[in-house]
Image (cartoon, rainbow over all chains, first blue to last red; front, top):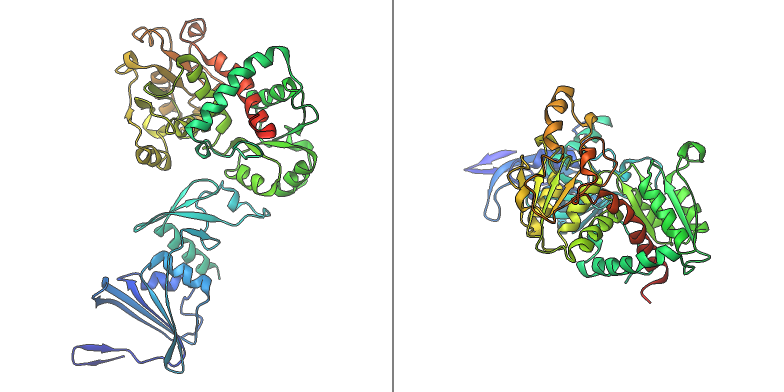
Length: 164
Length: 307
C-alpha cells in the first residue's frame, strides 16, 4: 500500500477476489463470515471507511488466491446487501457479481432458539428463514418463528471460526 | 380448501375458513350425540411425544364419534424413540399406517417437519411455546358460539402470555378478526414475546398492555385466564408476590358486565377460584367440551373435504 498525493493505492491482485461496497465498518465481519481469520495464509487487504458516492462510507476487502462460491456470496449479502464481488484472474476482472439478498435464506444461518427442530441432530431438516427486514437485517425462522438479527449471525460465524 | 391440508399454525387459516370450521363444529355437536360412521375405516395416529390429557382425549373421542379408529403413543419411554429413533423416521412409519396424524412435541417446528415428511395431513396438537392451532380454534369457537361473532368484542388475556402456547395461539388467532380491543394483563416477566407483539402491531389489531384487571373489567366481554407457572420465576419470592394479582374470584368479577364469559385453556391451578365454577360467566368447562366437536369438524374436513 502506498500513498500518492491524497490517494490511497492498494496493489492490484493477480488472482483472487475484491469485495467492494461493503458498508463502512463491516469489513472485519465479512472476513469472519467467510471464515478467514488470517491463519490460512491468504494475503488480505482491508480498506475501511473509504468515501463512497453510493453508500457514504464503504469498506473494501481484497483476498489473494481465493475465489468465492455462490453460498459465500449469499452469506456476504447478509452483511453487505449492496456489495459487488469481483473475481480477478491474471489482473483482470473476469466476473462481477452484485450480491442479492434472497427473500428466503436456506442453510447458511442457524436458528438462535436451541429448542428449534433445526437445531436437533439427526433430523432431515434445513434451517430456513424468511427475510422480515433487510435494513436492519431481521430473519424469521420458518420452523419456530424466532427472529435472528445481524449480530446473531456475526456471532455464529465468529464462534464457528474460533472452533476451526 | 380443507382436504388433505396440514394444520400447523392458526395463521395459515383465513377468517372465512375459521368460520367454516365453526359452522361444521356446530353441526358436529348434534352428530356427537348419536355418533356417525362417516370416517369408518379411517385411522388417526396420535403421536404424543409430550404428555397431554384434554387434547389427546378429545382427538380420540372426535375420531371415535365419527366412526374412525385411533392408534398412537403417549409415552415415548415405551417406543423406539427411547432407543434413539429420530422424529422423521417415526413420522414415516405413522404415515404408512394412518390417514391423519396429530402430533404433540416439545420441540418447536416439529409439526412442520412432520408435515414435510408425511403425505397424510398432519395436525399440530401443540409444539413448543407458540403453536397450538386446534386449541385456538376451540377457543374461538367458544366465543363464536356465545356471541355469534368475534369482531367488535373486548378481550382480556391474563396470566402467562409468554410461555403459554394456548394463549399465544389464541392471540395470533384474534388477529384474523376485528376485535374491538385486546387487553394483555401479565407480570412484566411474562408479557408476550417480541415476535408476538410485533405481529399484533403489524396486524393492526387494537391492543394494550395493562397491569391491572380492575380498571378494565367493566368493559370486558371475554376474560381469558391462563396459568402462571412457578418455575417461570427465577426468584420464588417474585412468584409469591405476583400470583395473587392474576387470580380470579367472585370479588374480582363483581363489577363485570352482564354477559361476560371467563375462559381458561386448563389445567388451572388456583388462578380461578372454585367458587367461580358455578357463576354464570364460567365457560372453561364448556370450552374444554368444545374440543370434541371442533376436532370432529377438523378431522372430517381434512379427510373428506367440504361435501
